[in-house]
Image (cartoon, rainbow, N blue to C red; front, side, top):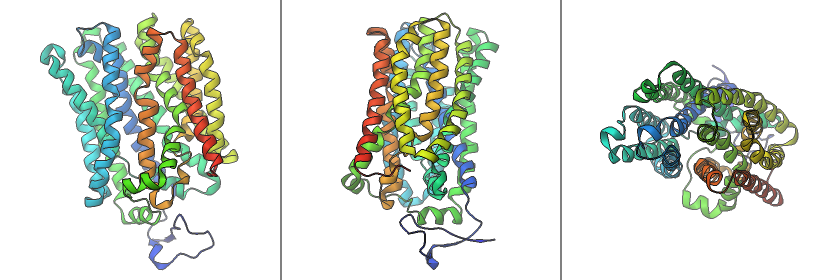
Length: 444
């Protein structure tokens, strides 16, 4: 056993820690925290994309057989958005649960709820068996997924950022975000395998359910990986010393409202692009091109693989030039990319593939620094709850309705308006970053 010292967030580097802040335990290293963070994020994004891809590939036929394929996807995207409404409500509920019973209990309940709602979708009969009740149950389970994700916030990502060396914060801010492309590749690969291996009747009868079972199994693994960290005395002490504990939400909003708003708008470009190159792009290919879903999924897997090294590069660049500056440059690049969106979507197969690959590359650069770009502006007492609420609002504003809005714009107004929609996200990002700079918020 070795003795390590945890320095509180507001303590100057030269100040000796008091006996109260000594942690007699194994050294708490960023590498240890990274493992739990990445496993947790892969689990969350696996659940996220299982439902998202199901909205395009499965639900229109299984739950909306009475509607056209286009209308079925519209209905599915509307249900998809329910999780983003349930997420902030879940966050508030589980914050109260954490205050009463502790972080470990909260995380256990949240991840079991997430796993049960996801597995519940796997067992859910379709419209042919239950009629409108099946649709209502699907909507309720989707809301439950978002509610549970709100409770899965464990503070490890913030602890990772605070424990990272000051000149490596961009790199360690990138690590949790790797869960997005990895989670997408796993889900897309599983759906592609099922589509290629099964007949259409087999896929829609039972094959589509397997990814939801897998999601439940991954949740169990993630639960134990994260509990191994958050319930140990060493990490619990570190979280307390870094003041990563819930603070009153009302007080947070009154005193830190500006930081919440800026933190929610800063990642808009990344979050909008997030769904345009994944869920929306698949719906576009299925509805308006002759490509098979499996082949298009394989292209998206390649795109997600391209995003991973771009995220690594983003971490290096952020360490040299600052996270906020890196995100601003990404916002400009996404704005430029939005101008080419109509050309690529309205073109042929090659243009469509270019839309995916370039989009994923930009997503890797931007998403790597999207979370917490201005969260350092929160006072340490409010950092835990502030980061949580900011994340919930950012996903709700930037991602929750993105597939539905983008598909509606492309169908009823033209693909050019999809580019304008993405441009609006880039403007939101750049505006929030400019205001944060004018307000003196740090760039690290």
